[in-house]
Amino acid sequence: ILSQIQPPYGTIEVGGLQTDLFSSMQLQKVQIKDEQGQPVLQAGKADLQWSLGSLPARLVVVDKIQLEDVKADLIYSENVLNVAHIWESPPSETSSESGDLPVEVQIKSVEIGASELNLAVGDQHYGLQGVHLQGAVQMDRKGVLDLQQLQLNIVQSTPAIGPIELHGSAQLQQDTLLLPVAELNLPWARLRIHGSIGALSEEGHLNIGIERFSLIPAARPELLAALDNAGLQGVVESSGALTGSYDQPSLQLALITPGGLIGAEANVQLAEELWS
Image 1 (cartoon, one colour):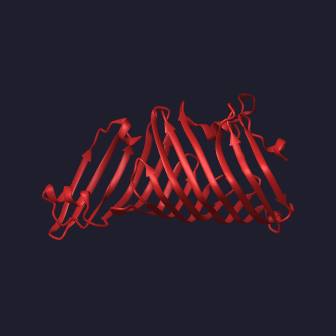
Image 2: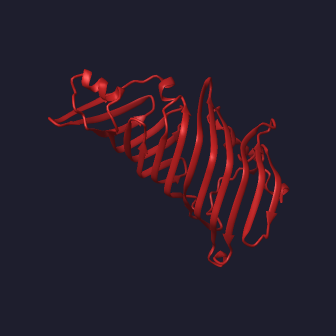
Image 3: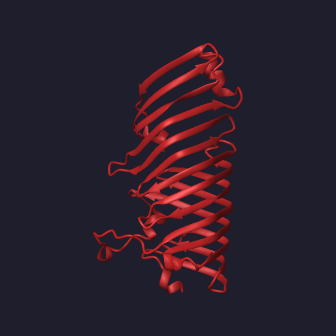
C-alpha cells in the first residue's frame, strides 16, 4: 500500500497499521519526509472511520478523522512550502488539462489534538504550540474545500501573543481562502472577519480583501491605553476594511466611542518583515 501512495519528492513512513479495510483504520507513528529525509509532517496516531454505501453516487463519506501528537515543520522557500513541493508533479507528468475529481468527499468530524506547528520563512521563525482543531470538511469534484464548524485553540505562539481561539467557517478555492464568517479571540480583543486572503503572486504579494472586520477590546490593556493617550478615550469598538496586498494595504477604519464615531482612511507602506 505504501509503495502506491509515495509522493514524487519525499516518502511516507508508517510504524503500525490496524484495519478491517471496510470501515476503519488506525495508523501509528506516521511520518512524511522530504527528499533529504527530514520529517515535515508527523502524527503519533491517526484514526479513520468511513462508510462505503454512498460510493455508487460518487461520494466518499468519512465519519471521523482523529489525529494525535501532530507536528509540522514547514519551510517557505522559492515561493513554495516544503510540504507542497513533496507532492508536486514531475515536469514529465504535468498536464494542462484540469479535469474534475472522480468523487466528492465528506468528512463529518475532524479532530487534531496536541499539535505543534513550526514555520520558517527565510531568517524568520514562527510557531504554534498546544494546537487543537475541530470541524468538518467537504470537498466537491472541482476541488473546492468547505471548512465548517471550525474551532481552533492555540495555547501559545512564537512570537508570543497569548492563548488564541478561532471559530467560524471558511472555503478554499484553488489559491484563495474565503472567510464568510470567522471570529478570532485574543487575550486583548475579539476580532470578527469577513473577506478573503489570496495566495502569493509571482512578485511575492499576498492579496488581501477583508471586506469587514470588527475589533472589540476585551479589557483595557496596552491597546486601550495607547488610544486613551491619543485622546480617543472610551473606545468600545474598531471596525472597517483592509484591502490590497501585504506591502500596499489600504485601510478604512472607524473608531466607535461613547461620544460618537471617528473615521479614517489610509494607504500604509509597511515593511515586508512586519507582514511576514
